[in-house]
Amino acid sequence: MKSQKTILRALAGEKTETPPIWMMRQAGRYLPEYRATRAQAGDFLSLCYNSELAAEVTLQPIRRYGFDAAIMFADILLLPQALGADVWFVGGEGPRLSTTTTPQELQALKPAGDVHDHLAPIYETLKILTRELPRETTLIGFAGAPWTVATYMIAGRGTPDQGPAHALKYENIEVFEGLMDLITEATIGYLLAQIEAGAEVIKIFDSWAGSLAGDDFERYSIAPLRRITAALKAAHPDVPVIVFPRGAGERYAGLHAVIGANCIALDDGVSAEWAAAHVQNGGCVQGNLASSHMVSGGDALVRETRRIVDALYDGPHIFNLGHGITPDADPRNVQLMIDTVRASKGQSDAP
Ligand code: CP3
View (cartoon, rainbow, N blue to C red):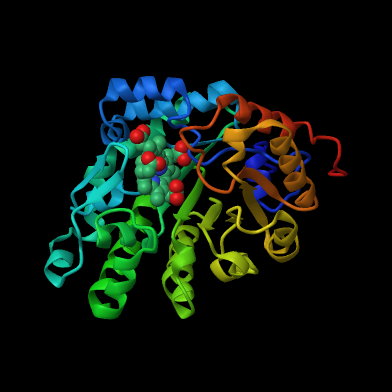
């Protein structure tokens, strides 16, 4: 039976009349209602683990804009915490974690199967959303990819070049690969539990894939993404998977087949025209408006939005930004982007 939800149709490989649209970090600090709820929750992590409030902030951009999908409110760094790492956020700076760089530190982490008690509030958020989302809105669950999560666990913080994680590969490959395996296994269990709690689509964020050079890109970004996708498909063949190897550049070409994912999410480092020729022939693509347009707005936003929609018109496309929306974005520019995408209706010769 044909699904009514546009995103699911696009993920199944159908070209839709108008691209469905949602936005990375759509629940976030650019929205006054998010800031108010976050203040009520206390800090960011408390908000993530408060299922009622996490569901509330997930719903806020749906109420305001009517996006086609809602992404559950959580963070990729909840999984390291569930594995036993300390995680905290320093205001204005970002995440901090206890580091995992020695055999002892790796050994001290929990087994992959032991993460679920800690993550139970996230599953509860999904259950609430399953009840409260409008019927036409698709619910997206997510996790970080093993490489990206490992970069934070190894460095103990965000890093511009992921230097500490690269160094550990050379200095102690057993610890590095042991950590990658642990994260991969835990991520599979986490995502399966998200699907069981109501996630209709899964997205895997490999935000730092672009810093993997040569064979490392295949070994530490693509292979784990393939392994996770295969495990999800084995249990839930009908749940679409979106993968986001950010910064892949020309290595985006042909990735659907290599990973076995339904959709490849593009950052703004590749042009939509190039992606139409080299990526979209393999299936659905998502992206890729530069987030800076959400700050600057105006004619440039409209022009660039139309260009991306037109370039990807002949195949399955989910409109999104190339990366998360930033706190300095103007909520009115989000509306302008949505109006422009939805006004593209009728230009197409879709069935
Ligand atoms: O997209 C959504 O709306 C869903 C929720 C979501 C968040 N983080 C909420 C969040 C998702 C999917 C993420 C993913 C995430 N988290 C990634 C991968 C995607 C990407 O952006 O590359 C990464 C690398 C993280 C780790 C992380 N979380 C960092 C580095 C930071 C600090 C930087 C920043 O933007 O503040 C966070 C914090 C974070 N995660 C916020 C939100 C809304 C801001 C926290 C706040 O309210 O203060």
